[in-house]
Length: 126
Image (cartoon, rainbow, N blue to C red; front, side, top):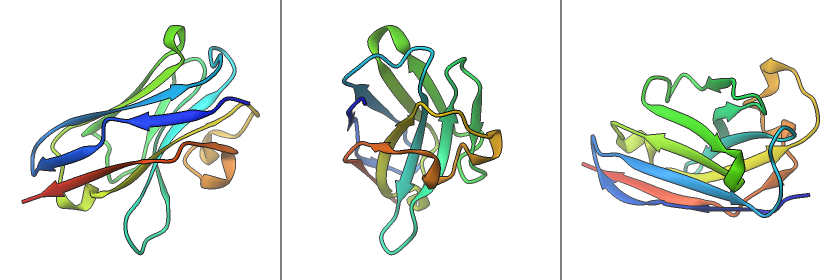
């Protein structure tokens, strides 16, 4: 079981960009599905982007076209490039991983993942 650690959060103005990183403590290549979730104050944790071991990706409607998920298995890392950030993107962002097979429709569901990082905070101000 890998451990995950996010980094790269911070404060940015509307329309700005940030790149989040997630470092895994172990080998993720060919085995783990990986995802990014976020949780705003008072709201449920929502899946926003996921990537399979072979690199297929899916996004939540709120971020589609603005965010890009990618993975670097050689360095056991996951990334989230976030562009055109809006105040509604303000949240704690979490990296998640799981090595069990799952359905495509479950890639953005919290119950799919049993390994989580501690989160990194993103604040977008106008």
